[in-house]
Image (cartoon, rainbow, N blue to C red; front, side, top):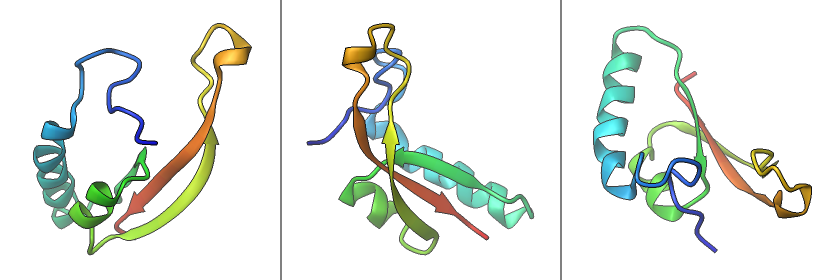
Length: 81
């Protein structure tokens, strides 16, 4: 199942923001910055950052006040180093 972007602040970051975010990350990398990004593991994210190092990791979402609502999910770590 696909977890929405901006799940903690509704509407703060959506799928449609990803290309602009990826362009910013690429520009930062080109300027010499080490960039590490964690996003939900999704095929569209994998394609967008196709030239970057990627690793899927299991992550537990801890922001829920109710511990029973804290769920695990796959996160994609994306880096340029």
